[in-house]
Image 1 (cartoon, rainbow, N blue to C red):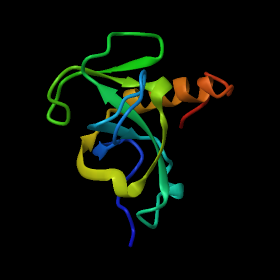
Image 2 (tube, rainbow, N blue to C red):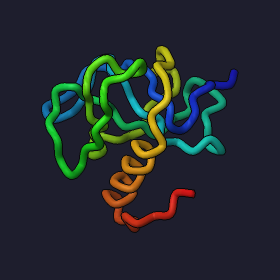
Image 3 (cartoon, rainbow, N blue to C red):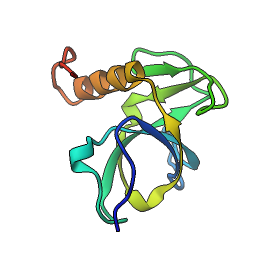
Image 4 (tube, helix red, strand yellow):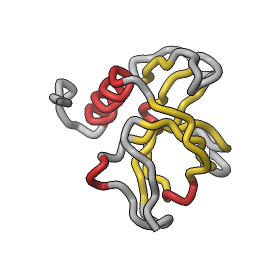
Length: 121
């Protein structure tokens, strides 16, 4: 069974219980996994970054204005990016703008020691 999640989409995901400082519960996430590495099975993992409407601005967060996809102004919490099983995805909410995807990717790549000026074309 193929999972139809694509890079740049925003999905509602069941992240489960969290520990202090982690984002958990059911919340929107931005899919960061490139399409060529899309999961084929529910147990395959995707790289995602959670969204939060209650976190303030930071150099590690990308602003996502309210839209048809996201009801409230939110931020992508880049330093909380991680891998989740595709089976945690509940429902596709919509698509992030290319600017949001590019800015999120640059921050996440920078957090793991890669170049922050990564070309994304």
